[in-house]
Image (cartoon, rainbow, N blue to C red; front, side):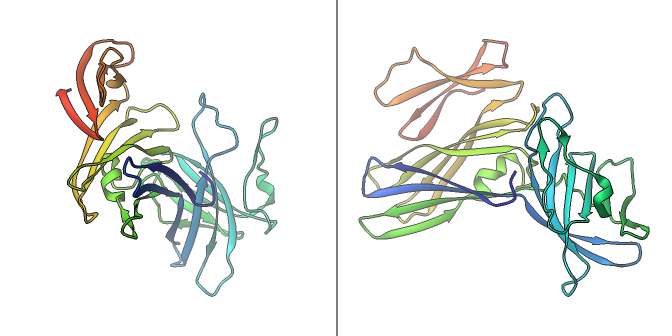
Length: 298
């Protein structure tokens, strides 16, 4: 994760050159939270989660946090830096030096964090067995409400942009709810959610068939990692008429592989293979003209 929005574009061209298709995927880890102290002080905390410079997959994963907090809209903002351990804790510090906005990770020194140079400290427990979260405001320690930072710290938006050069049509369609729904309600944790256009094709009736390839690969291996193909059909008025998700990869259960022995001028065949160490074929499907046809259900 980085502090700024990530925006990347994948441009492809239809066989019908009169129309172009563009995928726009925006990922933001910026979130705003409301915190209430035991003295009824209302704090607004803005945070952005980002990866450390070095990730050691042999140890418990962690992420850096940058942001600010304010007591009310008329007060000064105080810079925050911190460390987020998923499902364990989030610790935030107010730097003594107001120009400090990020924590850096150096290969030879590890975490560059001297806690004696911070004025205030927030500790949020993400462990269900620890009920108390606290804020040391520089003078005393106060209880504050718990926040489930694991529940949502990344927000995805995905758009398909259709450009019909022949009819001067330029329409951007939000498909976020469709392509995020197989993995939850846009509450995906800090991991790599990947989406790209696999192929697309226009038929004789003017319908546009789009096949997207999606994977949900976690920072560390997880049984929740999965992926597959999402099919969308737009009619000639560029309205979504059909949609379907086909899961073809599930960590520890099955993966898909192209069948190299199958030869066809327009069609590709894929095999679903059980697990990683098992070569048993448990299903198969075809892709032709950006549409999926199931041969053997898995």
